[in-house]
Length: 196
Image: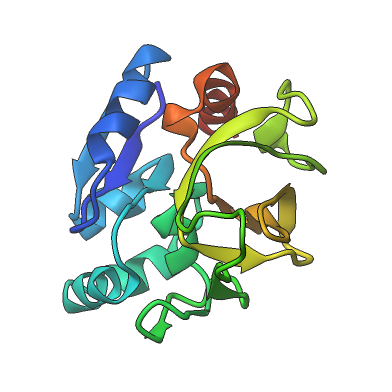
């Protein structure tokens, strides 16, 4: 049985991730203990909230360095994905720098609400993370900031522009949407991550 850890920091939505894992028969430990995080088979770095306070919390506890040093598969979700990037326009925040991309705020455009809230399809899927997930699958998003389309993108979506719905570099995977709230497609993505 895989040893799964969810990183505990002051950014919500951990409970919904726990429940989603339970639905697929996986138990996870929520912790900010560096040793437990390093020893885990898989690490999930979820989050909703604001970038600068989240980064401050991670830095104060040395979790920023621990996350960057991980060698096992790591999955960032929503704010977790944004914090893995180099910089966020949200309160001009220096982030973890695992990915070189910058996180940008959606422009105010007529006909588009910010934050983007709701279901949107993902395309150009390329990663074992999306095995068995249909091209054009619908997943659930809630966010005001996005990562530009880039060479690390393993899925894209379109809202005011084409942007990265998921990115990957080495053992680090990250998704902007919430797999734990994305029905069958999201469940399959979590199952695939656990199997990596």
